[in-house]
Length: 105
Image 1 (spheres, one colour):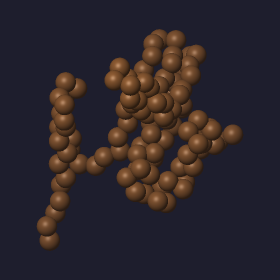
Image 2 (cartoon, helix red, strand yellow; image 1 turned 90 degrees about the vertical axis):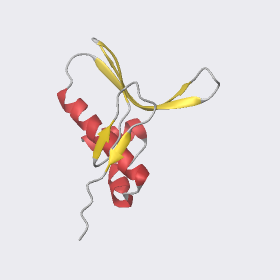
Image 3 (cartoon, helix red, strand yellow; image 1 turned 45 degrees about the vertical axis):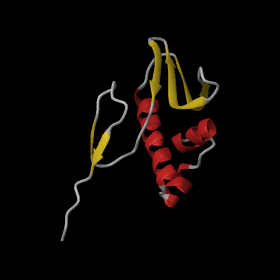
Image 4 (cartoon, helix red, strand yellow; image 1 turned 180 degrees about the vertical axis):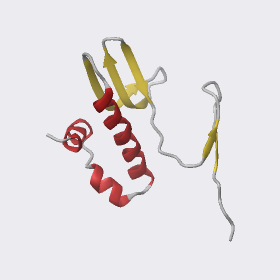
């Protein structure tokens, strides 16, 4: 089984179809796929990768976790974005700012 099939089994997302669409959600899936591929190739030891989890919050709603890595060294939560440009912000900021380098011709 190749890595695209493994990703599809975890997420029920065909990454080739998403790349063809290349809309905002397709780009998001592709970014998640890129991170998944690197983790899958690089990680060693006992682990489990879970993707696209809906986690209940205190207010009765849910929040999505893009990728959860349960590893013998700890639990790692990934929120993945596939943005271009320069992004400014700190982990304590409520909002981040994205700047695009646009050339005017």
